[in-house]
Length: 70
Image (cartoon, rainbow, N blue to C red; front, side):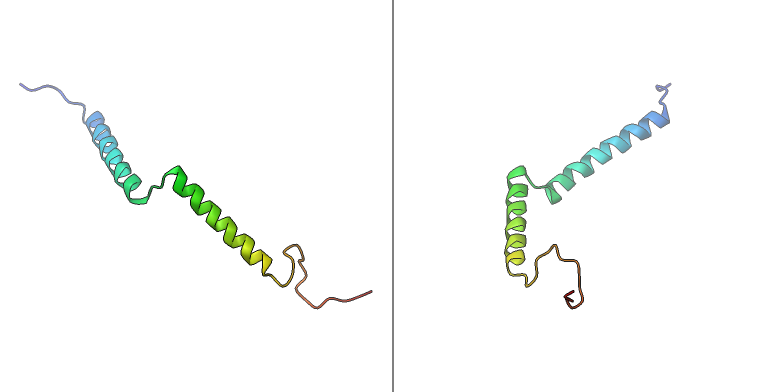
């Protein structure tokens, strides 16, 4: 006669193994290392700074209508 196997433990172990495998695939597929993240963040900040410099009105002005003088 064979060994008694707890099916719940078997299912949990199989699910954990499958999730680890999927995570490894996703790390390869979508992951970026720290240097790439820093480079991308620097590029984003530079582009944002460049666009802010070309703005016709400063960012902090919230009025959208014509300016009125008192």
